[in-house]
Image 1 (cartoon, rainbow, N blue to C red):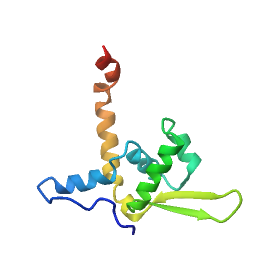
Image 2: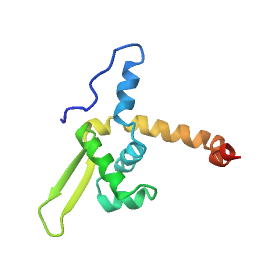
Image 3: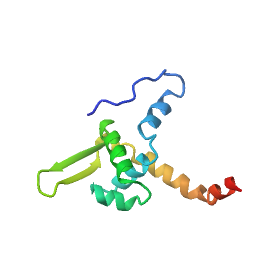
Length: 121
């Protein structure tokens, strides 16, 4: 498993939450992990599944998730190159958390619809 990039926690009462959030703190990381929970996907399949993400941002987020050991990247030596992403065992252990976030979001989405327009008004 890759060495996590985040290793400086003060072990105060919220330390475990801080550690977990540090791994999925990117704007698209939890969404990427959620889509990979259905199975292995190629880069362009992920990009189509997440229309708001740019190619550069998706690349960066995938690299960070791989460096943190949450996803695995499989490169096939062929032309054109074929690269597949899947959840690592550590990433799969986050699935209940992601499902809980999805459930919470579905239950409370009505509170946030149009929030961006209200803030501007």
